[in-house]
Image (cartoon, rainbow, N blue to C red; front, top):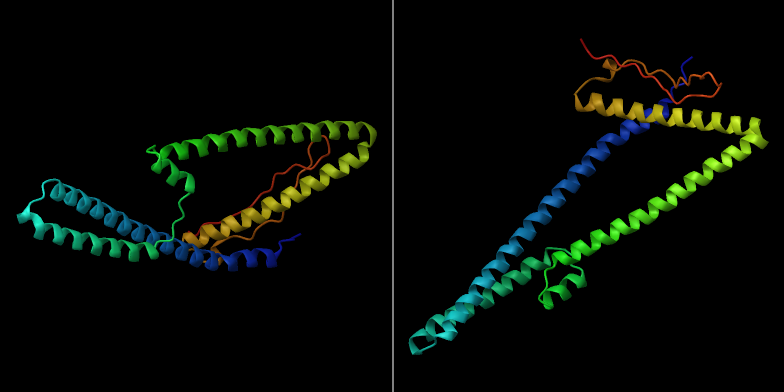
Length: 217
């Protein structure tokens, strides 16, 4: 008996072109942002070079170096104006902590290190809470099974059936992606079997689901 949900599979398949187009747009936007960032970085490097030249000119200033000094000052002003215009098109947010570290003469990589250490610590705390809830759930199920064995059995069957249904839908979407990426026609995909939960020896539903696919000859 075929209980394949055509609406769910077709809806998932119809959303694939939109996902591909939005992914391509996001990739183009990322490349454009990187290009603008490179332009700003090059402008900053050029400005630093001009400042170094000005320092050398001023440190050894004489009457003959007046014209080169004015030229380098004009070049610095023009480069700062160009850098300001480039920065307006580059939307990048820098944390104030990084700016403060640079002002204090410290390595901004310390901010990245501190953020990573903080994430690791929070991750360990979250993992401990998750493990505690899993242990509590297991303990509650064991206690409930002793008091209400029939209800617990029904609950586990419902969970197994729902998990098999979700696995089936995920498999259907993955197969749709496969024949689209391989430029296969929909006719080359064999008819999907509905979820086929198999009862184990203990009478509970297992989460195994089977799919049949047929590649073109």
